[in-house]
Each structure stands twice: as structure tokens, then as C-alpha cells.
Length: 163
Image 1: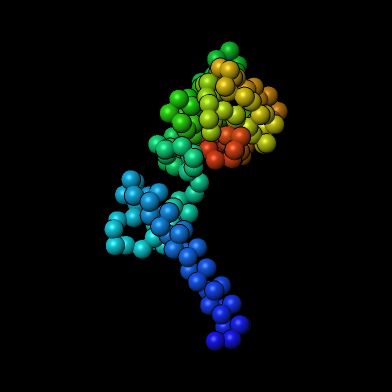
Image 2: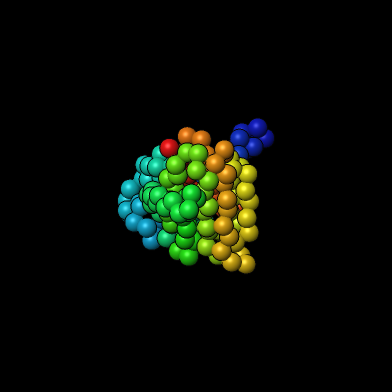
């Protein structure tokens, strides 16, 4: 066998091992979720998880990709809402705010993946490890649209909808 054929076979074998390792690790990772029953292909499950959008927390078990909506209550001319992080994801992960009214969003104390919360859209980045943190968004920044927030590792996500 020529050296070129040997090199091509070796490269193909390495590629096959990498693909099989990926498939096996995916099967192991999803075994507890029931996402890929035995005897079925990994590819449909992988495609459906990608099309479902980002999970609420890609690194923490128990996270939900389902929207958990919450609307702020207006008190003394300020919209207020609390986002609970105790379960390892944002609850609510979809916040509805009214345009033109200042808002205060309180994020509860968190650690691990949720230890930091940030929103480039609203210009905040806060450490949640020492206790609850309230983020104030001024009225002039609350214009109709959809905005995001996430953990510092960009693995847990939330949405702020201003109407």
C-alpha cells in the first residue's frame, strides 16, 4: 500500500472515531432526558434541539427552554419585577415592560452559571453572588422592542419585551 493511501486511511479512521465519540457522548448526555430512545438516530434529536432555540441554561440541569412570562407591577411610577434564580434558571425568563416608564428588575442571589447577569442592550453587568441585585432601567431606554439578558457565560438567557 502506498504512503498516500495509508495517510488517507489513517485520516478517515481518525475522522470516524471523532464522529463516533460525538454520537456516543450525545447519547450518554441525553439518556436521562429520554430525548433519544434506544435504536433511534441522534440526528433528529440534535436537529430538534437546535431548532427549539437556546435552552434557559445550557450548563445546569433542570433548566427550561419554555418561556416563563412575568409582567412588572407599577408602584409609585416605577415598574418592578423580581427574577428568581434559585432553580438554576431565570424565572421569569420573559419580562414584559411598558415603554417610557422606569423599571427596576431585581435578580435574586445566585452562584455558578447564574453568578453574573448582563445585558449589553441595557448596559448592565451585575455580580449576584453577594445577594439580590436590583437593576434600574431609565424610562428613555425603554422603547418598544425585544431585548436580551444572560448569565456571564452566555449559557442562560432571558428576554425583556417592551411594549
